[in-house]
Length: 330
Image 1 (cartoon, rainbow, N blue to C red):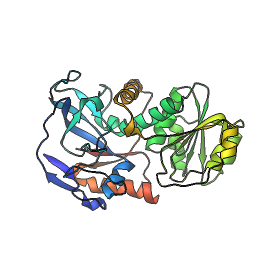
Image 2: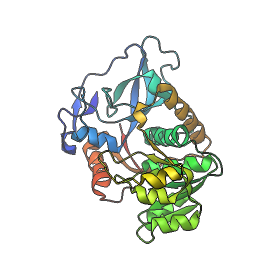
Image 3: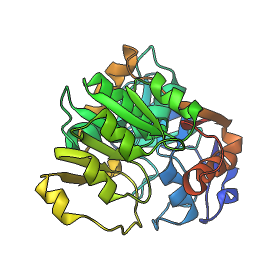
Image 4: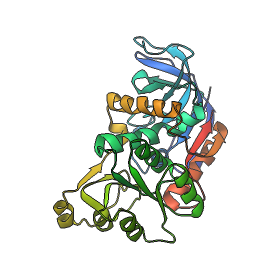
């Protein structure tokens, strides 16, 4: 079979398309004929060596995939050959990735794909959708009627947070860096969109929510906690999903006087039960049309290196006009 292989960490060009043996389903695993995978920022960190990890040789990049079940391992009862499925949480903590024509995945990380949803759509939603769900509901305990501020509402995770918060009955304020991205965020349901190239985020938020926001979702690599605490309401919750190397100042006094809380989490440390709960709700929302995929670019497997280059330029260097997720067609 064909696979995008990494045999040493480095720049996107280390990804090479190779012929490799097809995987076998071990106990508790299914083999998936992959139709679509997607690129996440963490994929570029692992591939480049920014995040040190023990990798299979060769290593296939990718956390997410969607396709059909080709084979079942011993003990698998929830799926049958031919079922349409999707998976996430791959390519991390020793698990093989997804950029290959076939992959063997532990069935506990796999979920049925609704008939109304394409493989491209569900692959693009997988990791970012579960990340948004875990952050909003397991961590922030979002309630109907609350106000949410999403930094970067047109991006992969941000667009999921905007949509899920609206589904949950929240008022959503978000930010974008261009009129085009602002319109996209509005299309996903944001009530207020702040173009931060033209407006002060803090001033615009306080005008829209004078009492502050109940939940702030931070996607930037360098959080500004002084500004954040100023925008939070009493008992506001701030969710962090970026800034691995950040060491910003923190306003301890204002933070605890407001009885705020700070929630840092990484999706791939969630339990199978937590991720399945999120996946089940994602399936329901996508099936009924309330949650929509945000696909910004599509590449064939043969151009996996180019897909990684585009993601890296957008994530690390702020270049290009990428809005949404990159899908790799297998």
